[in-house]
Length: 111
Image (cartoon, rainbow, N blue to C red):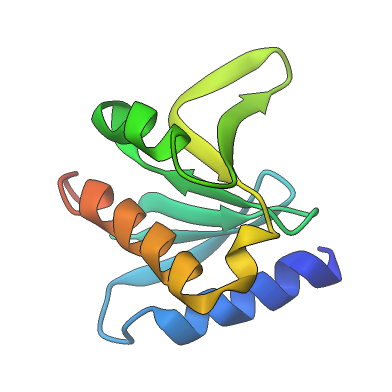
């Protein structure tokens, strides 16, 4: 794992409430944060963040600064956006993306 993704992982841990049913799982070349077994966010090697926003929140999330489609190979991951590491340097922006992911993941049944 890269230094950029380790730093972002540490920042995410600091922002997530300790009482949440969280776990971490290696995926996509990084360490994904799981909430009740559902993927929430995943810091990527380049310092960007994969954020799960759901299909309903996808277009709205894409309109925000630093957000782009999440492509894995030739496939676009519906319901997920990639957020540039540059905009995530602002703690409030990072907190906002985590909140957006939690709002969607809270609607899913635990795994």
